[in-house]
Length: 594
Image 1: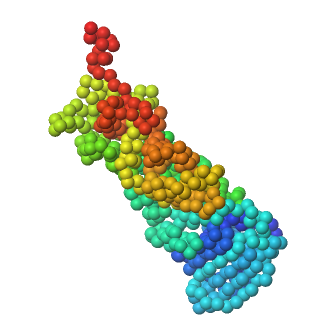
Image 2 (image 1 turned 30 degrees about the vertical axis):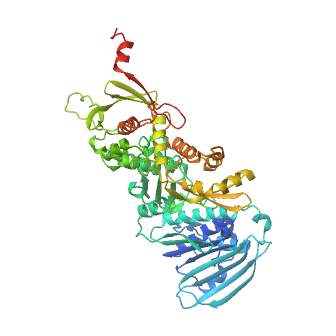
Image 3 (image 1 turned 90 degrees about the horizontal axis):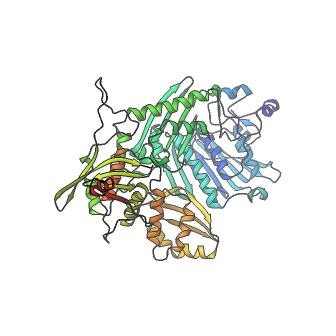
């Protein structure tokens, strides 16, 4: 039942979140739908949510009297006194979102039914004074559930409307809120409609957090690399969904923290995810993942932030330790399993070859086909030593495959070690090779990119930007098709407003806008310039740590590259891939050959 809180209790709780943009309204309305027990939720927006936001659910609905009260200030069905806050288990406790929306919008329509037989329509009109005016109730027809339609956000408050982003930017924020809710509630069916076009749909998956996270965040080829673990402590339970080394990212944009199914910004819990997997992600990359914490409401305080984006725990240290310890234990206990051995399967290893796993030269293709000819080694720091009471035996040398030339077996590659956090040192035949790991990896990625075709990955959140000059606009318009062949999908709204809809699936760069606009200087070498940028951004950097197996795979691959000019192969920026010393050169340097 909806009721008006007493003035005393209302003052103690303080006002709810102010609706400052369409995404905030979407968040609150979806929370209300989830709290109502809905199993199907549809979010529909027009004009980035500025023109219209609609959330439709099949939850428990409201009766006529409740509907009349739901837009009143401090109206709620979830608490009666301040003490109820320590026991609240819903996503929210206020009807404040509807009150704020009603006062901020040009028009609000709510249709609700508790049984699918009798339904009521409430219409309200917002005003510049921030008051709800001309509320009207009428009987109508609807199936069980509630529909909330909000038209003309801030039409009555132009000063606030001026601070909204472009429609594409606001739509992207609404989409992100929708994604966050879909991740946390895998048992609910979600649909996202933008400008009357269905953009996203997630069917219920029986409460499987891992499956839902994969569907929402990853493409089909990446989902098999997800792992799930569970742990618990006093007053809390934790589920962690995370990707193996194959899914490493340059940033933390695909890391999510949920507490009682609400996404929060908590650096400590995100740090626990990183700490638990320290040493298993090369090149200072970050894991993809989500941490779901279910905690006793009495042990957490969400009300330190008006939008509940932050939370204070009674014992944050215990939760932090539980997450990092469970991840560390899982990673170390699967030394010989998929989690670590994936680093040695070259065709599945985006670290070296990207998601397509294609090689330009026949020699490299043969290398990938025969990858099983050598045994994987554990990551450094692993526990694969054999002891029999005496001292541990010396480790066996790390050998790669036998090289085949004209049907004759050639010398094998032996990994010697590394130098200066940059060079991989290998021995082949009577020569010693010092391979620049960054230049070598860069050349492999460059060749693979140009071998095509390029797979474009649609961005969950398009990247909006504005051009600085007419020259930028002309370049993007004339090269739009050429850029699409390189995996870059661009759309424009005119007036210098653009957005990036898709990038190559293997893109790991920094600012894509800067990289794309820099292609104006490429001339006819557009593909080569973009391939070089992608390769440089994606290649392992100086100081990056490769395990023995990955280092050996990289060395084998780069030594298989033959330069058509007969000279030493070089990276896209012109640097040699390796330096070499023959046995005679070394012997002569120490005066063993006179």
